[in-house]
Length: 238
Image (cartoon, rainbow, N blue to C red; front, side, top):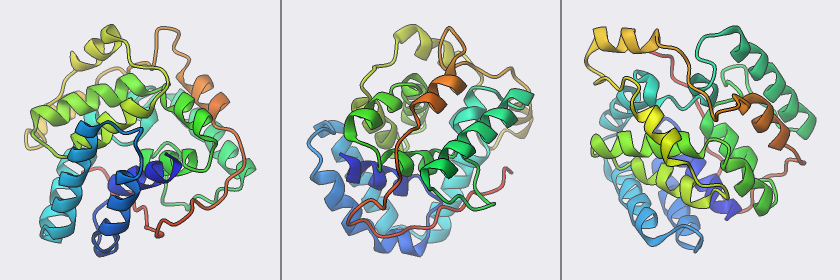
């Protein structure tokens, strides 16, 4: 399972030629993980086929429209928790310190709550700890999967897989609350601006996301075996 978390992390980075070249190894890691149900696994293979054989410019444009322009699909976890509030900055500092103490080097271009980076970290933890930590934002993953389904995006499978791997499953009411928030089309600039001004949402009713996430991000870091290194660039918000 830990190798497949590394693979899921790679699938959520900005598409590059290096990612396309690593598609075969990523596919192998996913296929070997029987904890990912058949449906999401098949969806992941479809996404890999698109990434491996698609025009790189088109793949990059699609990625930006989905994940950089649209707040409801942001790959930065604390965007869904703190928005632009002051608490977000402190949460970043706390999570960064956890990474540093664990030995993870994060470049200045990366924010600690960037989901591919977080998944890469989880891929180094014991499987039980990784699955328990995934349960903290599981309802956000479920909501993002549903939004991607509506867009007929193959990226849906990544979030379905994350929900499947999480120990704690998302509560229906929490997912429904997220799905009621604005989810504008990436080409509707006025609606996008309005969405970025909305209040942040919480991971759970006790608003304990920051403490919960940070409390669970523990353990020593070590390179995940047998997976090719892939750069993790963070594209600026459009």
